Length: 226
Ligand SMILES: [Mg+2]
Image (cartoon, rainbow, N blue to C red; front, side, top):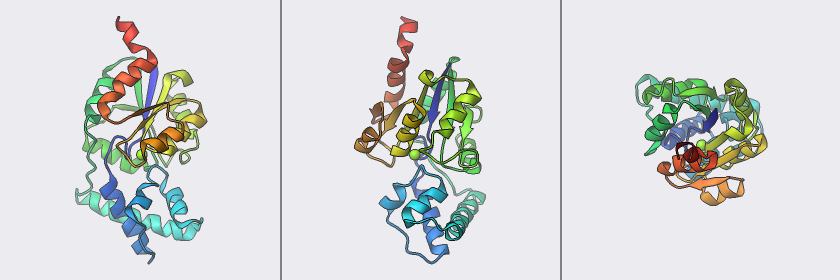
């Protein structure tokens, strides 16, 4: 059994517009100036609390708690009005369908998003039943702690050598390395090819259609057919 664990924002879904709306609301709700788009997007992948801690340069639980409320309020309002729509990257749906059709593959999610937001995205793109294990901010520590990968493996019974992490940030690559699993860094998200490579990516790909060939090579899937 192979376990392919996907990060969500920046890897499967292009969520940057909604993330900026959320961060802008968070900073405005506490009367602080909003950081630049680049600064905000560099923290995507961390749980919200850790992301705010990074951006503020300090851990102020009360302030951060209020910022998270500001973030969630605007996102929930948009969701209620049907305005929260994060498109999937080109080729993502096809790759997920092809992988989930294999009976020796299980798919998982490891995201800094909350379960509620993740389920909303799954519903939007009709991905119900595609992911066997879902590690979110509600049930696991923030990346780069390896907890999400360990929990995904234990929920599916997958072994280290048959597990791989797909993500767009250094946090994903470090989490994989901390867990002792291989990783694929993707360059269409929020961190550069150089950054994910430096953070320990086993493979780096620039387009979604390169993913299955890389996995086939890594896991020797082609040999089974030949
Ligand atoms: Mg990401």
